[in-house]
Length: 166
Image (tube, rainbow, N blue to C red; front, side):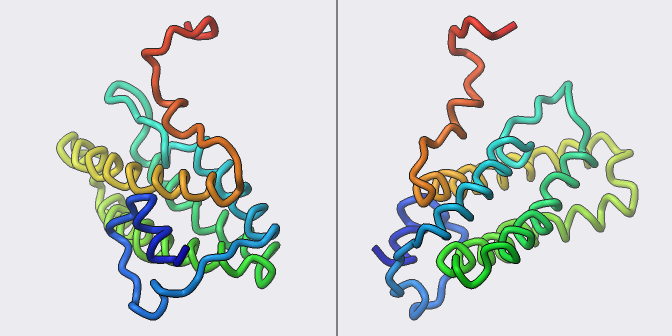
């Protein structure tokens, strides 16, 4: 499998890969699997992949959660770094092509007081839903690399008749 095939499989359509990079063989190591697991845990437990219901949550905190992916990813890269080069290539692309445009746009708007405007809050939540869709795909890709069950979608389904639900 190539990197291009991997991104296609997980429906990360917004990712732009150079022809050369897209054709490179994807061959994760054990260190890639551990790094993917670490990132998967971070993503699956945050607003980055979980619904923010209209009557709950806070836009600024949601933006901070998405922004924190930079520090989280950097820490994983520093820890695993060169030993997890397949993960590194994927993580950097996702940060720069999916996360950065969202955080750059909304950080500026937040500084200008956007979250004091209900229409802007609504637009933020619409944009958040779009990036969440892409980050859920990324989370699925990471689960695949880590060789674990992808719980991203199941953790969102509140309609399941679960004895633990309230």
